[in-house]
Image (cartoon, rainbow, N blue to C red; front, side, top):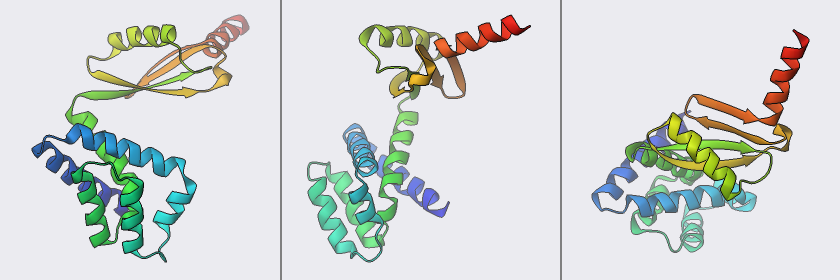
Length: 177
């Protein structure tokens, strides 16, 4: 829990700094890239979490892996080096993106589909989103073949279930009554 609080403090400070320098969107792209790279690369995650690897080695490696990031992001990597806190880098990156979205009135819509979304389904989902939220929306698609077809849309605490599996469940309940 303490690492989450620390990550939020780092993320807030980096967001404030990036806003003052006018690079918050570039830093947000960096943070999304860092979070997805660490999440998608078990070897890199293990390297970052390993307490026996010197922080100097971690900083050098991370600056090589993320060589194209903004100077504010490089500053964060150096600050984590100074404070020996590289193990919370992925959490900081995720928290930064959340804070960035809140500050810019952007909401994440989680869309679960049976297959990857095509343009037609994305248009249907965006039409439904327009009725549920007046914010700018970022769509995150998750594939779950068990819903058979259609989609399940989650925005904040609202859910809209237009899946075939849900319709079959409703039909089954109606027939059993």
